[in-house]
Image (cartoon, rainbow, N blue to C red; front, top):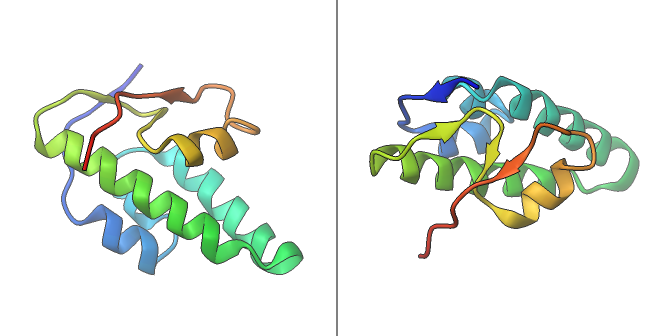
Length: 101
């Protein structure tokens, strides 16, 4: 599996521009899943903003891990609630080490 090597401002961009932040850190499949959940959630259930928030928190936690020098897999989720939601469609998803704070 591919290992990610850089972070940056992905949580902010990911929230403001949907899944772009996840593309920036190399988690392309997660970005597509976030886009689909937020689009379908917005049109069908009014939950699109909730999915965007979950994705942004996950991107923030992944970014924190990258900034701390940890290795993060492209299918790794760091926010357990978003992992549980995304696992419905992402069979490659794995829950990474949880960061406190």
